[in-house]
Length: 239
Image 1 (cartoon, one colour):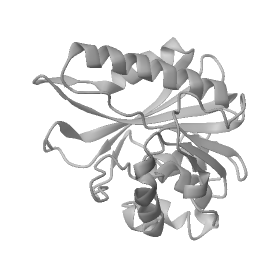
Image 2 (cartoon, one colour):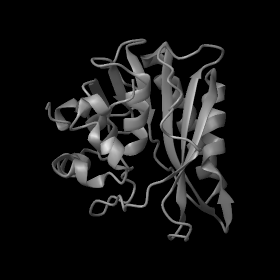
Image 3 (cartoon, helix red, strand yellow):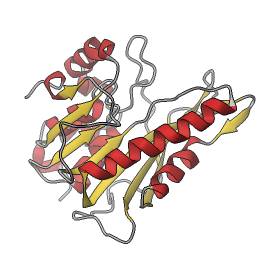
Image 4 (cartoon, helix red, strand yellow):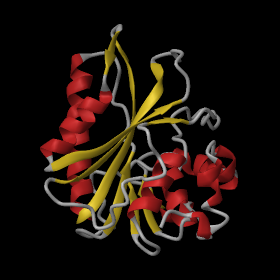
């Protein structure tokens, strides 16, 4: 398989100049957190989200999918429902929400994070996806994925199921998947493992070792055996 690290460009995902207009069939975005304390940080994050979505819209085909993975957290003692901020940024860029899944790890509070995350799928307003299988294997809307996803000091490494499920359902072999804010390279690895082309952007070059470790141990991070099988037996993928 092509090395995931060779498909990651270390730069700002708000300027993905290596990807042309409307080249990607799916963009899987896991945006970073700006801060967790002040109103100014909240405003800065909202602007960052709008810019990331604007660039994601630019690189994605009009009938493609933009999916996001994000986690709510406590801000000054109250819940900051970050999926609302993500949806606002998406809608400001002409997108509409068409699928919302919640990934549950635990119901216990873990420092400033809670044990559930939101997986949101967006499409251009009024346009149906080119490939639209509606995630038939994954209902109801809560995915219970109990395995820990930490890798060393990188607590924000996402589980592989969310990008893999979207890629398998809404793209075809050789389609291009773009992963802004690539982080540990999970979405890039899922795309390559499923026979798609992939390009990732990551602003922190210190993640190179993390991506290499994630690639070396990729199959270990799955908690859903059905999805893990997609990477070893292509006949098990959704049709």
